[in-house]
Image (cartoon, rainbow, N blue to C red):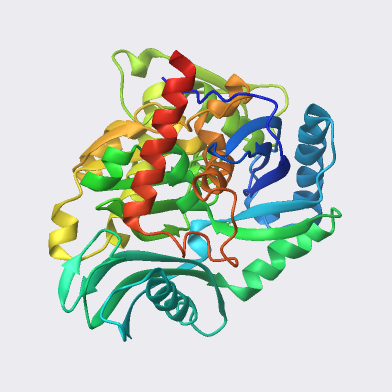
Length: 428
């Protein structure tokens, strides 16, 4: 069951944050009000939520005008609910467009004692080289520190040393993709405040801190693609995506049974499953065939499952191939969390367990105060994660580099203190 964070109202220094998740078959928007007061943690309240979905049409997925209409519709719904207009937005970048690099930075410690400035210098130097040619850096995440050659995962500030080595994960996206997303947003009269990797955002909204510490794979099944994020020892160690998603299941149903795409989506949603049930061969589904107006065609639920299962298996197999091949890290991954609209397909979790050889669960975003119950569905994980990331960072921006200024230790500490404060407010 989704957990709800409760906040007191009436805070000073309020400002607005808007998140947009542009998918192949839907656009989601979430508007939050952030309020801060000296001596209190940052508080957030969802004041607007919008969603626009359309039938899956693969050849039209990249149509700018179609996506623009969806964006305007979702934004208008969220703005009417919030009672105010949005001008600046944070936009999620799908996992299939991401590129990651693992880098190391060495910094000589002149005074013999590691200071906050030394850590910031190492992070800034790493952030400047995380992106390959033709790409723009989105996040620069410190994964581990080495002090005079000895690994030290937590914050090294205050330790005596002559050399600080920082291992980082750089997440970047092709500049052409960012320009394309920015163009669509600007056509709606908005300005992009920052880009954020969609798998990273979905993970921030759905993963528990214990899962991040022990090692977990988050799989976000969208329409045209599937994103993934891998955490180990409390930090992000890999993320990306594959170009197969729930929309491909819809297309398979349409091609094999000759159903219109809209009907194929309806059949998948209402009757589809990724596992066989008793008596499925005797349960029939009637649907209109393309070009046939007077007669209905019929297919058994068992035949429908035979079409769906191979594609769902392919999705998780492709994700498994993308996971880090580091022997020690790969052997430590024992849990998977699946989210996104495609995760609601009956049997998806069971196939994830069988294909990935991991214990799996369905991931729903943690509800922030003010969010309607519908916003707790897996389809809102990315938008909720964008807002959650701003909350975790204290409302600060990191020069477009997401969590570049945060260590694994500070992330865990901030999350723990924030959760404890919310619990105390709720109880007392």
